[in-house]
Length: 84
Image (spheres, helix red, strand yellow):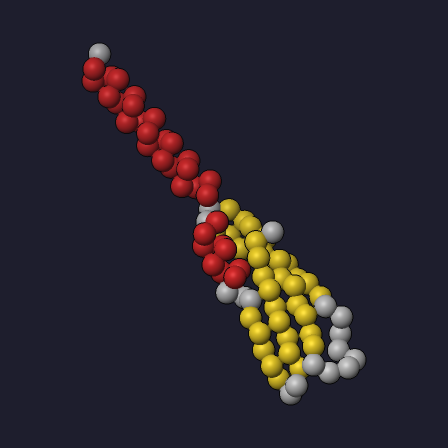
């Protein structure tokens, strides 16, 4: 009887472990706002979205890495990205 209970418990824990690992790895949406400044006549602010398939922490890091500020010929572009 103890042997059967131990096997059942081990299988249950293995199933929970596998399910929790695979359910965290899913498609997430990264949303980026883009703002231009520095010269007259620049385009209005815009936004873009793309998907990242990863864990929440991994997707957040990849999404945030897209954020940044670039200055080129007097035009400043600021892109701010976050998980949506």
